[in-house]
Image (cartoon, rainbow, N blue to C red):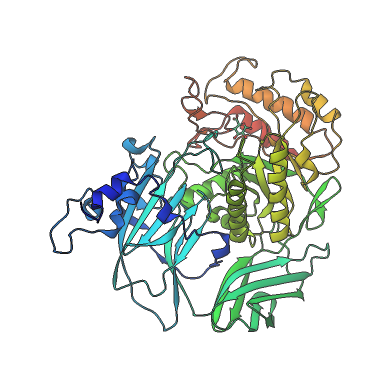
Length: 592
Ligand code: GCU
């Protein structure tokens, strides 16, 4: 009886095959703010295969054990370098019909040549995001894993790279009840290395996290700079420079952290004047650089104030999707979305229901678009489980650390349409506190449901929020439109309300009577009646109707919907505007 388990026996008999991959997990604590550092892109063709039974992790393909100790060949069930290639970043769903509905594990493989840099440099493998979980292997060794489909992560590979290397990444997009979001959503479950991958080099001691903001004190003349450094010398002096303002100061760094406030009167960033400054931070030979807009967002009573002036947030909700590329929008597609939103008369976009690519907030900074960013605490979540809260909190912290220097981002949202239960209240209150702790400069919100029995705005979470988001579908899911006015009459919120969703499905080009559902005329009628009411409610300070454009949705199987949610103001490929686009555009233009 052999004492050594046969290699295939280990693979087919081990039920807890994921246990060896439980640690290390990349999370917000390992976050590094690359700013505009040069990176060595690893985007491009990677070898690829779907792996429905997770055999790569079960049979440890990443070790590439082709022969036994005596050199006798093993039979292999994979052929990394002969597999077909796919472009990274991409979603496998939109690359080939055979992968469109695929949910499960898939294996990405590429070679990587490496030239060492200056002595002491530190090297990181950086991922924009992977949907949903990713397990990363370098030269047969497990680097770690990441959970969460829409936030960045990285692994240090200092000293682990040879001249020629092998990268293996297992990505699994299986929907699970214990995930955030869980297995039931109203959007398409894309999968893949859907954002960029790169190698990033920093010096032995480097600037790790940065926050550069206007202190929200209503005076617009105090800039707060906070940084953390990692490495050998964590006590020293840091320099901050804003050349255009002739500003250059030094401040102390002690124990790896430095924080200082400076009197400064920068030109304020706003949608009408998206002024960005080159900001440089230097420490111990390292330099961090980014484009920063200085602005203040605040809540005062029922008002939302941008740079001290009350405003109405003329918005629209948007999923991160294009027909051609799923979640992996190109720069041109992101630009097109922002341009079309401005044509609609928007100054604000709700990026639903998960963190969109960091490119969106960077471009929004440049073009002057305000953003609501959200984590996918969506509908029912297993609110009672501490590990689920840890997952949600980590995704929230990864989002905030990634985008807190983006002037365009004005609201963090901790969720959408969750049931008002005690567990949910505890769970979401913790997330609200996390937001305020990590970023005291922005208001926190969530898209809540109203209490239809009265009807009234009565979600207990509202007491914790700075701004109340409300989703209401009077005229669509709630046929009795007269209740919309009653909803507002019965509610006396003490803080601003944004109507984060209203709308109706419409098949592009389908015309009919105003009471004929799924026609453009019906959708137009809903918008007209919603606008008529919403424009009279003093505490409604913004709207982000649902939704900018039609999007894929496996729950929508009727012939008219065809696995799409048709509530878009545009059709899915954004080439055709529906009648309601004009109605919203007219309302928003009337406010300018
Ligand atoms: C909900 C939900 C959206 C969904 C929309 C709809 O409010 O927040 O994600 O797509 O309604 O039913 O169309």
